Figure 1 (cartoon, rainbow, N blue to C red):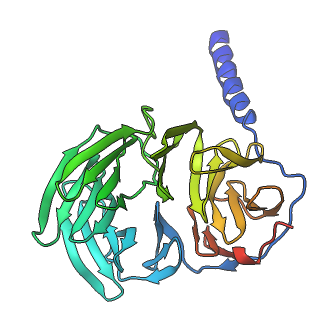
Figure 2: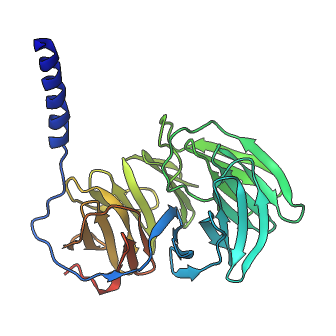
Figure 3: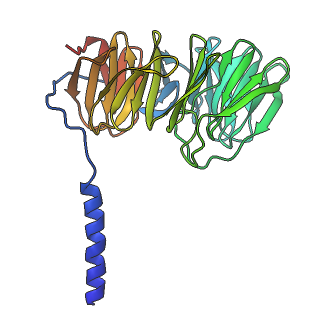
Length: 333
């Protein structure tokens, strides 16, 4: 009996000491702000958009009303249409009037970009390839290593001239020539065993910028540069790259990943972050909204309620937990 009590007491001590050791962002001063109710909620989000319960879609730049079939979620938009998919491998290409094209895959579509007649895709089983809408079939498919745990912010394929850069779920970039349908180059951004998918893929001048939750990479004619960072978010805005780290540090870097400015918000855990106009914004999971200038030399912290669900920045608005905040009205002074 004594041994059972001792083991139970030891176990409880370990549990409670583990919980109490977790540290949180504690700003010295906070400001209040007003929010407005969305009368809607985010039910799914991806790298480049969020789907609301009403069927409305939030892209990076605006709110769009689409006729989404039940069970379908927004993946990406380009060529004046949106790519939507369900969890069973069905894919619909839609505009404001409805479905304009469809495709069927053996696994759920998790990332995609339309380039001419092709849908460049990445599937949940980490297969990637090309679907030809004219022939109505897959014309190129490649199987990558299985990824058992992924970050939901899956980057979409990126067109670069006659090439397309395909981000896989195991941390690799595949550069495919669309004309020959042959792989021009492959490289890993990072090689961690889990949560290693590409969560950001973009271009700044002649540099390709990619990130997993473990590393940021820059690839250009000046070579390959890397930063080992625990990454929450990356964004490119007006020639600047901002990296939001999991320890609460915000870093501004150039296209070669050289650090320009940085500011640490100790123990902040970012649920969403980005750049709106001249403001760098980051929402801590406890509900602290950091608003800073682009040089990270000035900032204000606003107090909201704790973040319980998805959060997304669309245009100048922050959407979270059924609430909306107009970020353009906030100041870092």
